[in-house]
Image (cartoon, rainbow, N blue to C red):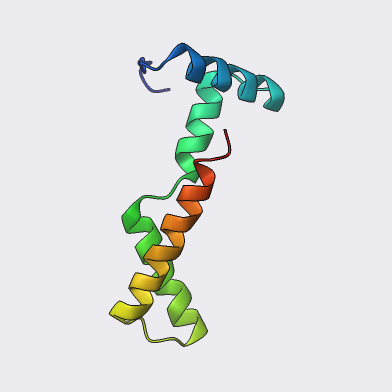
Length: 83
């Protein structure tokens, strides 16, 4: 087990995390760990895009990379409106 730590956040975010955790039958710590493990870093997204292009037989050019990055930006923008 890793050493516990604290994360500073607003009361509103803490309350939302508590509600989300309760709805999933888990603790806030478990929820944060789950969310962090599922969220990809930029490097992981880039690697997956490269692998997907290879599987599809698509040459992974700079243009394809830009289109993919633009798509991820749009996804993140829509995720920001969920709360």
